[in-house]
Image 1 (cartoon, rainbow, N blue to C red):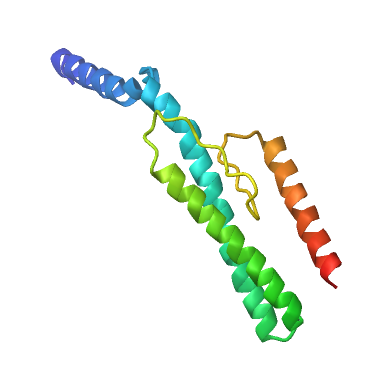
Image 2: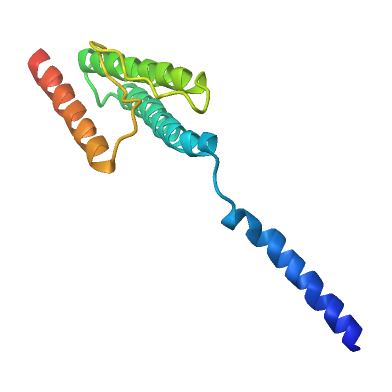
Length: 143
């Protein structure tokens, strides 16, 4: 290979590296920084909604196989439908926000509150545990 061919190859390789690595060194704008928590929250609420749908499918399957009493089935189905509705409302609220808008707080007094504020994993775990305790106390209180 000639020296001019080697120089052209090295220059092209350097340009390709610069193009590939440029996004890693670019600073994020304020709008991009603000969108990250809302995107993360939207993903969490979407996962919660998917979980509610999966639980409804499992509940319907268990009822069809005769594993669940009809009264318990109706109660649990109503709870999971309400949770799904709350998740859809939260997704709708998060989807309607511009990227730089503050994330809204959930309404007080709802049957199942889906947090729309950014939370740490510990806060999320605590909220799930509290919801499980409430569901168990409602189920045991109704028997």
